[in-house]
Length: 301
Image 1 (cartoon, rainbow, N blue to C red):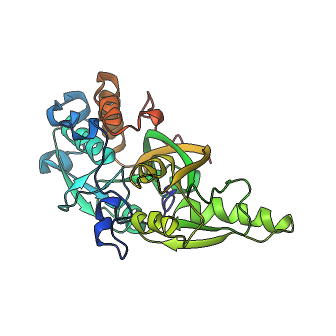
Image 2 (cartoon, rainbow, N blue to C red):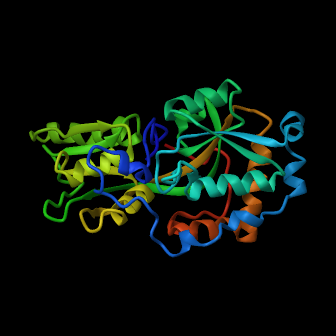
């Protein structure tokens, strides 16, 4: 999960795979019918109650400065033309508009976003961050989605996540998968007298996906919506391996004990209550992780 965040730091999106060394392995365009429809965020009205909770300097600026990482399809990534897209981008846009602000999206290295929030460079950090107890020591979160981990492998080389000792697994640099999930699995292999996992650490989801397609890795591990989207873009070259596990919340990162948290929570809850939130998720086919309450610091692990 995005522990880079659950990702700790990754990814040039699948939308940019045409620029990869092996172009054409993945299809760069979201292919669900819903993702081609006008965004539900296009007509979001202001919630005056939520907007009144904003710090005066943010409200007066007329914009919400958002630190993000546009490499994580289908959450936050770029179109072939270089424009921000994804269900996460649509949701943070709707949240900004509900607060009466224009989103000012600042593409950044994943690992730099939380320090940027702490230092005041960004009003919020939005990059599919997994809300963890450790991260809560540095920032606060308003949770908006539940995601888990899911693997994918080639149909001609299926890999069981529970029986992968000795296999090479492609993973995002700084992600939860790299820092927590796979080291734990590898340690269990060694304790059982089996060979450890081999981690192939890469910086973009396009590279990760293509590493498995091309046989450089036996499987990949990523957040469930990312893995599902990656599989859908490979024209049958990859398939899901096993079920979702280790579900945890995604959250908006905010300055610890700062003045933005209540406004962000109120705006997200308003989007949930009027159906805009679910419409955005359904448009991208990721509604399985929808939540009903925008909880503050709901991560427990």
